[in-house]
Length: 65
Image (tube, rainbow, N blue to C red; front, side, top):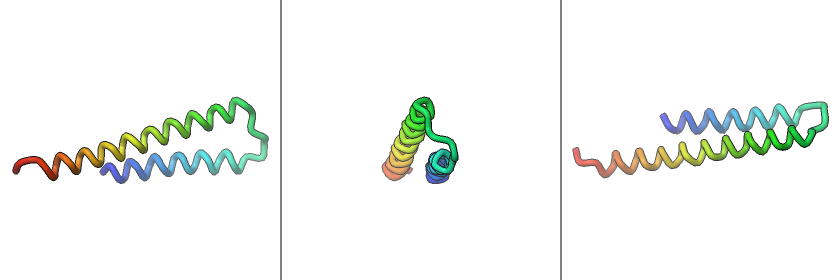
């Protein structure tokens, strides 16, 4: 499940980058700031989802059954 969430966030980030790169209009300072926000948001989400996946596997592996 976590892998699917990671893939979804990565696709959103990639789609945002491709959309901005294919724009025929130049990038304003506000657009650059927005791109950085999306990068930080998606990067942070990817990091925390990966961390959650590792923690999930760790606790499932080490839990007494």
